[in-house]
Length: 267
Image (tube, rainbow, N blue to C red; front, side):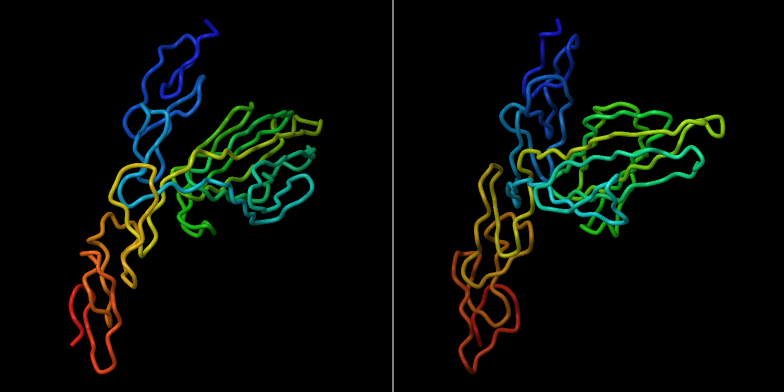
């Protein structure tokens, strides 16, 4: 039975029935695991094996971008670099110090970033992982997830936002009855998810649900981020034309003007 595994597009574990991923979720690998929500405006594709992007959104590569805040040390490394996706926490905890100690905060930016504790050895220490889902790269605005007490490897968390901040915090366990030092050796990694959906940039649009990219508005036209059709493209003030009819926007001649945004002639 242990050789039976759930295929792509199906959640479940050995000995359980495999259940097809629901709409808006996907599972891109064979084996045990849950279906994950499609990031951004993604929708299920290929029978739940992947995600496609809805109107106004395009696939964006998910290369982990790491940054650090707080102190970093040899025992608690945090070196920001594009593409870095792992790190190690290794230390001896002094039994005379019962205060909670913490590592530098690590921020992962990407499309639905995920962090995994890949291996863990803990002795006489309580280890907690704190997580914040952030609205901005500096995590100035965030929502905290419930703290997780970590005692074994395999724990993972996937953010629904573009920035995830996490921090290891620890304390020697057992109070004053503990006379031996505690220790932790933990490794963590971030996983590059399949490309996720991001809004089309201002000046572009996309009116289909697929893996296609966004289309630029006609020359000199403007549109809002995440625009879903050509009709969202308009000529700015001082430019004549009808971008929604695939016309280029032309700057008003000397001695003429156009005070409003949208289709129209210079006066």
